[in-house]
Image 1 (tube, rainbow, N blue to C red):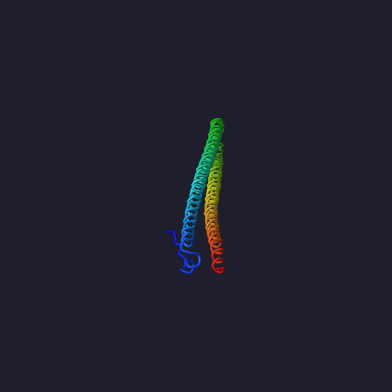
Image 2: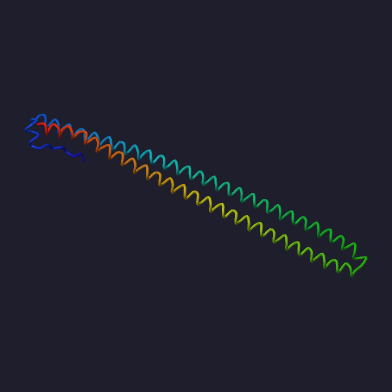
Length: 203
């Protein structure tokens, strides 16, 4: 609500009814103009802030989507590599088993006792290899899982830090703009009141 300017009776006595009323009307018009300008400026600043906030939110959503796609691609790549390694190890084991079986078949006719000993030895070697390969695969899977968890945590922490930094910057901009508008309004009122006070003292 605009504040209606009123002058004391001394102003009316010294300046006259007409001049005093004109000054009152002029002060009220200036006050209304300043308030309207300030309202329009605040609305413009809020619209800019809202647009910038929406833009930042869209950028963050796009970045999150891109990171999710990259993580999915990495997970798929690691899974494909693990599947390939498992298939390769299985093929090697199958080949070794076939070769050992052929050797055993050849040696069965020659020495039964030696074949029994060799079968036991080959079975023990195969068990050790299988256990070693399984342990290596388990270790690789654990390393990959730890690496992915670390990357996800780091990306989440970076996104949280960026969101906090953007919010702090927006708050500082709003506070600075509000302080600038307040100082400007006070200076405008002072520039109007000083000449009037000077006229009053000279009168």
